[in-house]
Image 1 (tube, helix red, strand yellow):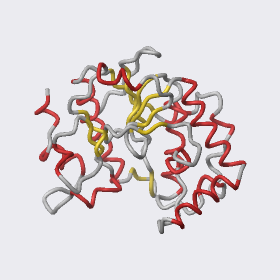
Image 2 (cartoon, one colour):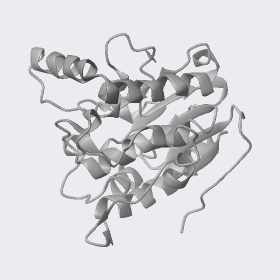
Image 3 (cartoon, rainbow, N blue to C red):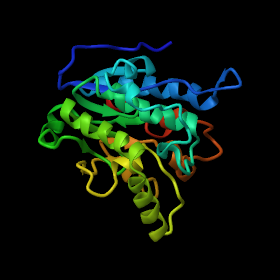
Image 4 (cartoon, rainbow, N blue to C red):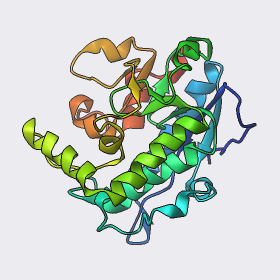
Length: 246
């Protein structure tokens, strides 16, 4: 059992993540079961480095005053065109931004493990609003104003086909697979989001073994898994355990 923590808003030491289990055939998926183990590691790693971890859920997202401005159940909308990960998963990806927007401050995915990034280290990021500290937005900082820009981006994408068409056109130009997601919309042309690569999710070399923040991204799991480990949490516990960095 994990503890879903809460704390006072506007505390710069807060770090939020979002978790909502994926259900398939009335059962929690193996992905979500391992997510619970990852959250335990996430809570410990951020807490050990001076942060106040807060685990948010779909219930929190629905409290945001603009949550129902988009029908996230409409899987035929622009938000889900050519989705690689499936609409049920992507629906939760969009929902997490509404949950994050209920809190000023820092967020991260629950598979971003902290090996030494303190609140003091984050001070230089606060002039940016919002700011992503990796390439795909797995962690970052925003005030309510910054979060509003992110949410506006999704609303705009729903209502303007040109936004999604431009993303798909850019992907075609770079010979990438067609895919629309929350992160593709956030990184679209003229996005207000600044990118500062402080979080490592590149497992083609050993930099992740010394980085202060490591994103054990499920999409990159094949880059670093082997026959010894069946899950990301098992890999972390053995290859770069949180307990070594108390």
